[in-house]
Length: 95
Image (cartoon, rainbow, N blue to C red):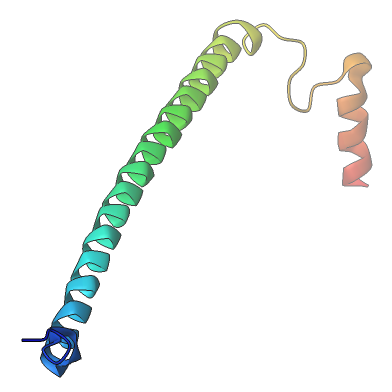
């Protein structure tokens, strides 16, 4: 009663079953890796969204300060110059 002639690993179906088992195990590991990548991606989207919200909030508050304090009484306005140069420029353009 020897064990040498009764090796189960030599059968084609057993080998195929073991290969399938390894493929299923690898697929399962890749599925978990994909799920972890999705979680990481969604966390990064949240961080980017928070950064964008902070940026927009700061910009809106800066615009509010600009309109409240700087724009209404400022001497620096678009097209406004000291000493009447604006009128001279208008005359030059007409000629």
